[in-house]
Structures are given as structure tokens and as C-alpha cells.
Length: 427
Ligand SMILES: [Zn+2]
Image (cartoon, rainbow, N blue to C red; front, side):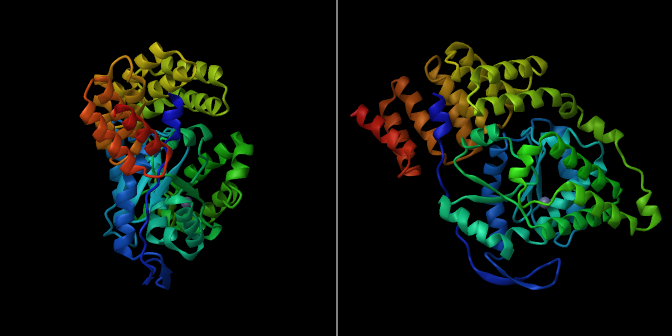
């Protein structure tokens, strides 16, 4: 069971046009992998995969509204106000934020729950907008990384501000689109920090939000040193970034420096996410244990997380996966059903329910797989599982069609091969 959930890795081709354009921040001409239209297209096409690869959008209207409002405020005063910016709060419990080219930005639950003010949020989103406006993702520094990513099998290039939990990367592999984490150069990070402060200040926020943000990153690095060293080999450390931000803020007019930090409204609007943080931290620890094959300890942590936040659908889904790996089929199916019911628009929850409910309730499995297809169209694993559900429901012709769809979506991979084998079994 778990094998099927974990083996899904397909590829998507990136079509890139080469040309020259002027950098909106520096005013200099630069060689680009793509023009602005290409940049926007790329962001739009990979955003759903990036969101779902980060465990889907947080199912809280207030949280999404705040992230969107603050993000649009800093984007509006940026060097490229006309891009189709979009800001999404995602369920990943790690401390992170990232931007796709063209202005599609995500911030994680782990970071939102650690921030203390709207000014901190403005600094983070301003920093990400800075990567977009300065076109860092399409700069010469990243062309090499991107070329490699494309060679590896067509991957999304995306920036990651911080550490990704290994366990969640495994789960992220459920998403057909492979997300490649790449770091920016020191200079690019520094430039984005500067731009983040500028945009936040122009939008009326306190520049101290950047200090708040850098302190959080620094704290994470102190708590998980080994982790960070490996992943941050080419990433500037926050100690330096903190000092640099403080120095820059010191050059601003006194009244700007002294702007009050607004934390009350932030705490109210983000209350659900802040309150649930201990449960998600446990879930993250549980995922890390599972990724080290410590299934029993991982399940225990996730069960503890579920007791703390029984309404957190994605945690129920992660718990379902851990129960399945312990071969506890009945409880795993029940938990997967709850996960799908409580998660909102989360692909992974629907996929896991689609798989774990196949035997006890193929009709419910099918329903969940149809939702998964809408959330992230084109995944071969969804077609394969749909075929299995249809087969169990006695709909042979429909099952055959689903299997051939899986083959078409994954002509050279394991999922396509498995679909072909099952189609032959149907005669
Ligand atoms: Zn950055």
C-alpha cells in the first residue's frame, strides 16, 4: 500500500525560451531563460503542484485572507507591481517560504505560527517578492541549477528559504511534479532582504519585522544544527543576515525606525495556526521518524499529535499513512477517511484516502480520487488507483479506460507499467 503511495514520481517538461531582458530592479540587461510571459506561465503551471507538495492550503479563510492582503500590499509598492501575484498559506509544518517565478508565493504554517506580527509577515513576503522582482530564479547563477533540474527529468525550480523535513520530502514525492530545492547566492539573499525591508516600509510596516524574521530563522538553525549545515552549505546564515538587516534599518529615518510593530491583530487572525503549532511540531517529528523507518515511534508521535488537534485533517492523513505502514488496515482506513473529511483542498489527503479505502469502501475511494484529480490534474497515480476502485466496483470498461490513462500519463514509469499489467489482467 505504502509502496504505491510513495513510488509516484513522474515528470513534466519545461519549455523554455531564451532571450534577453532588462532586470526591473537593477536596470541592467540580463540573459534570461525566459521572458516575462514565460516566467508568468511557469509560475501559473507549477503553483498547484508547489502548494500541494507543501501539504496543501491551510483550510482557514482568515489566515489565507491575511496572507493575501499583506502580500498584495508589499507587491503593490514593489518594482513589478503588475505581475499576477498570489500568496498562499500552506500546511507544511517546517519554517519556510518560497516563490515561483512570476509572483506565485507560499508561506508555511511552521513560519506563520512563529511570526509575531503583521510586520514580520510583511518582511517575509516582501523578501519573496524581492526574489521575484529581481528575477533571481531566472538569473545566470540559477541557470545551471535549472538546467540540471530539467535534465533530471523535468522539475520545478523553486527557492526554499529554509530546511525541508526529510519525512515530508518523502511525502512530497507523492506529488508527481518533483520539486527541486535550490538556494540563492549570498548576494541574492542580501538583495532580497534589502528589498523586503524597502517594500514593507513603503507599504507602511515597521522595518523591525525583518529583524523578527531573521531571529526566527536563526533560532531554527540553532535547534537543528546538523540538518542546517548540510542544506545550507551554500546558503547565507541568518546571523549575518540579522546584523545586515539591523544595519540597514539604522539608516532609515527615525520615525520609520520607530514605527510600532502590530502584533495584536496578527495573533487574532492567525489564532488557529498559532494554537495548533505544538500538534504540527509533533507531526513533523513523527514524519521524521517514519522517514528513518522508525514506524512504531513515528506512529506514536502522530497519534499524540492527533490527540492534541483532532480537527487537523492533514495530521490525521499522516497518521493514517503511519498506521498503514504498521499493517493496521482498519484503523488506517478510518483515519484516512477522517483526514480527507477534515483537510479541505488537500491532494495528499484525498490520495491517501483513495488508496487506503480501496478495499473496505471502493465507492468512497473513487470519490476521493475524483477530488484529487480536480486539485492536481494529470497525476498518473490517481488514474491507476481510480482504475483499481472501478475494477472493485465491477466497472470493467471504465477501469480499462483509467488504466490506459495512467499509461498515457506515465509511459515509461512504474505507475504506467503497473497500470498496463492490471489492464492485461482484465483481458
Ligand atoms: Zn530568499
